[in-house]
Image 1 (cartoon, protein in one colour):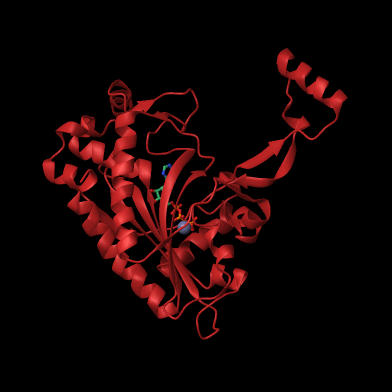
Image 2 (cartoon, rainbow, N blue to C red; image 1 turned 90 degrees about the horizontal axis):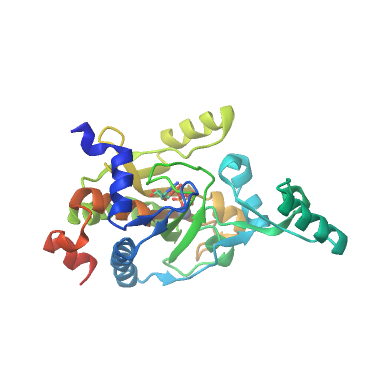
Length: 303
Ligand code: ATP
Ligand code: ZN
């Protein structure tokens, strides 16, 4: 049975079936047509749910203002995961030196300067500043999908440096936001189980940096601020988080002045599906040929 959860064989089979295309960069493989079909199918399910729930869709680019990353506290908690965009801003002479260094095989990265943008670390980050001010009476529900970057290079197919996150973000009165989160924990489990996945939920913590981070993580667990839905993909004992639920309380709304209809500081929560992880969980459960998947799964993904 352990052989059935062998990471290397799984990776090899994904390549052989054209689902993923190696690029030589860890956690940055290409996605074949069949893989993209699965991602599109699942994302489509979320589209339909989001629409029925009255969610407002917004699309942001995969870069965010450096100032936003700072304000969200990302560099305090997850500096090890951040990705910064740098570019060349020098003069002619420096440009010539840069080019010479590149072709001589010398280090040249130190000739770049930081730009005002960073790679998006989570799909929901640009949502909060966009909705500062008063919310309507029953709050707001926003949905976003974006490519995100996390510096965690790995050969493990479910741990990527660049991947897509499909999120729903709820903003409103504390009791409404908490009820939404609790309701979605059940809905998320039902949805994934309905696709034939052995999904379980559990309290979770973010990978906060360093020794101080251990305290933050313990606190997060104790307050039950983060939940995950886990599905066995590369290991039976250590199932993979395919969806995360974060209750931010007033952490982000206070920073951006998001207030409920009565003027009080609102609460926010988000849930995010890791689209590549969902696709890989489906492949693991139903096989490498999606044409041969059970009909009841296929009709949900490709109605
Ligand atoms: P926040 O907005 O507070 O940063 P989040 O919910 O947006 O949190 P995470 O909980 O860190 O972000 O991740 C959301 C989902 O993204 C996870 O449940 C997982 O499915 C997917 N994910 C996270 N890291 C990776 C990775 N390295 N490779 C592939 N998928 C990942
Ligand atoms: Zn989020």
